Length: 134
Ligand code: HEC
Image (tube, rainbow, N blue to C red; front, side):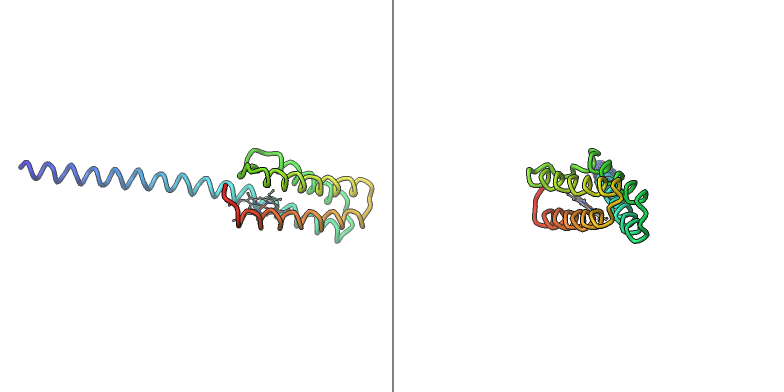
């Protein structure tokens, strides 16, 4: 009888541990999904800018550049807080600002250059993250 009770106790404990552990993993995964969803928006704006450049639609360029600028100021952006990451973020914002200016000047060449510059910043920051620790 005593052994039986211990058996049930261990069984219940195992189920609770499994449950709590699973919950934690889910929480972590949800957080990562949310972050990736947020980050994914950058790609939508980048595509919107390319479309705007191709159609000489300065309004689209401006709106999507503004979208990128806004994202870069949200707290989710700062997934890393190293000085390098902050410097890369500053370079990114500068490139985006150049794009906004170019769009308001209706200067297609400058906007295209700013787009290339922005894209380089996307690649550079992602390259940094592949090698960095948070
Ligand atoms: C200053 C740093 C930085 C810059 C610049 C940057 N990103 Fe990111 N990006 C991140 C971080 C941080 C993540 C999240 C990585 C992770 O999962 O830990 C991310 C993730 C992403 C993801 C999601 C990947 C996935 O797994 O779903 C996409 C898409 C993306 N970025 C696109 C872009 C595009 C497009 C640009 C340029 C317009 C850009 N990023 C510029 C830091 C940056």
